[in-house]
Image (cartoon, rainbow, N blue to C red):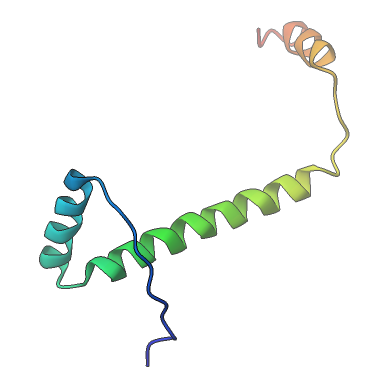
Length: 77
């Protein structure tokens, strides 16, 4: 059983819409399914990025000048 769905009007560039229709026909799915999957994937990537930012927020901060000096000392610059 599909989850409850909401209707929305989205305007696509003509070329994108054409490609979406071709992809839908090729994969025997709907344009809505393709768009929903793409949005889900983008939101999941955003959630992963936000989690990484939150995790790294607790790391000590290093001034850029100190980082550059250290990289030069180790021969990385």
